[in-house]
Amino acid sequence: MKPATLPLLAAATLTFGLGSCGLEKSATRPEPTQFLKATGTDTSQRVARLPFEHSWRNPKVDMTKYKYIVVRPVTTAFLRSEQWEESQSATIPNKRAYLKRCAALAKHWDKSLNKALSSPLCMFYRTTDTSKSGTLIFEVALTEVRFDRPETATGAPAAPAGSLVSAVTGPPSCAFESRSRDAATGTLITTAADRRGPEIKVVDGAKHNLAKPNEDICDEWSRQMMERSNIDIYPTVKRSWFSFF
Picture 1 (cartoon, helix red, strand yellow):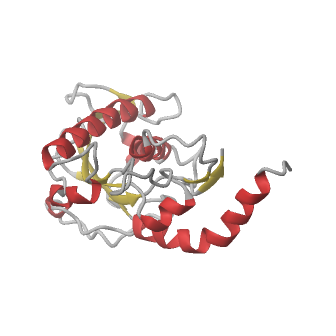
Picture 2 (cartoon, rainbow, N blue to C red; picture 1 turned 120 degrees about the vertical axis):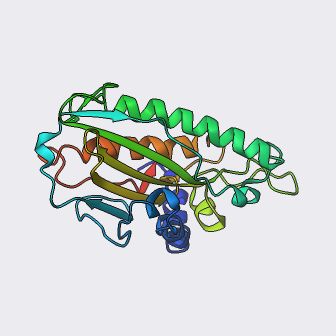
């Protein structure tokens, strides 16, 4: 082990307990928006193999009959925009700037989600044709976003996004809700919801990258949504918690 790594390991050991407080807050299930309330689903339910704070699958439906999936664009219509001040910084001075950045994040997630669901390991073929027999319509709402603050109120650099210190002081985070329906009948097939902070990393302060922590969260969700379709290869869909780089 390199000597330079030892201080990082010590910091991880000493502060991981505190960092878990930030992790717990980021991982708790938020109050559902009308996006999920409209489905009438009990959002306290959870599928054991999935890492989301809420997940449900219609027990009356045979999932093997579905071969195609239509992915709707990620919506920000249910975003809790009143929380924008939690992201206020020199780069997000007002609500308008916040909403613009949220829209850009939703667009990024669109691309990420479509790429993930186009994987050969996905059990569905992505399509735009809702008339095909055995088609699901998949919808996702980005409901909460807290962006990283690149500098503090005093102008000093903030803790690196995803670092142990950031986990304690309030990391960037996102929350989503999703639902899928039978394209032909409108029958509700699945719902899910989660709130997530970035993967916690021990980083060298000189090498940290403040860019894309929220995109990384969405990218991980994209991977997990693909993996949940294939129970044979992914009997348990895992989430990231801790790494070194």
